[in-house]
Length: 490
Image (cartoon, rainbow, N blue to C red; front, side):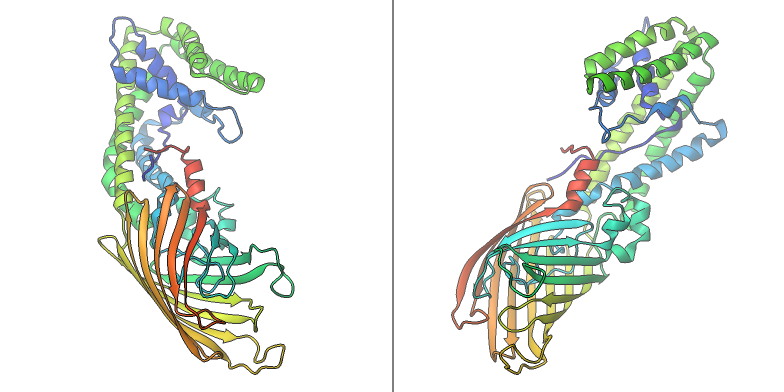
């Protein structure tokens, strides 16, 4: 499963798409010249972008092309910065790729009822995840649970709206702290207050965060795609500036009027009809270009052809950079250890509420293989039950271990084999649990865990159980990335 990552850039001389569109359209109809197929292809792409739905979510904000802020001495410096910005910009969309990570806990913790996992993972969601699960085997009764996971980073990044490379780098502590709450789906109150609340968890990633959006991979992207991208921008910037700066007075006046007229026409048409189509946009552009073409001199035409060629070359380089970025990030796998600390507050209607302290250790290595080894200590929040039964301070302790293989099939599936041994000091018995679990990703941003779990006994019964667990986890991280990248995929 892969996606096409759009590289957003705005070289100074064609900072506005209307300008680039006019140049390409004008170059395509120059008398006595044969336009290569790529010109019409690129023109169609620009026209389609101008004709995208008229809505606040997809504004056409490129009217600043009239300013043409390029200065001769700033061309190279500006282009280098833009190529760096292009690499930083796409990293905001790489959260979509993190949908395939195997170190993240997408659902309820292993201590929650209805959970589909018996071994906690050390990783957390970058922004927000909602999971619905059914079928825990260690509980006497097991229903459906709902788990919401988030981080303080979600708020400080304005719910992902300001989730840029700079924000990502500066708010490390906030995005390393994961918060989650699990609620039962039965509709019954299982304790006093906060109806349906079952458990809450705070988890902090001490070290080993594995996001493909980190600075180390952005730096690698700059090294691999930056030089060629910069060179293409420099050339397109220079050729476009030369064309514009040397336009004769008549053509220059007509060109500026055409840009203003196009933007005015588009805004008015959007306000009146609420939509545009590519044919209408293309026809309007051709009409507005008539006085521009009439005013072009021979030198104008020569420089225009060079500018169009440079622009098309730049687009080719950008397309290649997009593919290369996708290849690099898809192959990226940060090997090594990962450590997290977690605290769970778990409501228990049968006895007393408990606090669970967790040490979560993971190790990932090539090929697609990761291991987890966890230790937990469960403490009674009260030393006696409502009926007067005296309890020990330590309710239980356990050890968890798992091996995860994958993801495979273009990040569509991974497999985990896990085991859990728990010693309940109050009940004075030991329980063993084993599980085989598949994470299926039929849709981007959506994970379906399916697990076959065996328990030697439940918490309140000496009988063994074999049960199928199933759920669904919806990752806001990936969905926001898909939305910001236009929902395109390859």
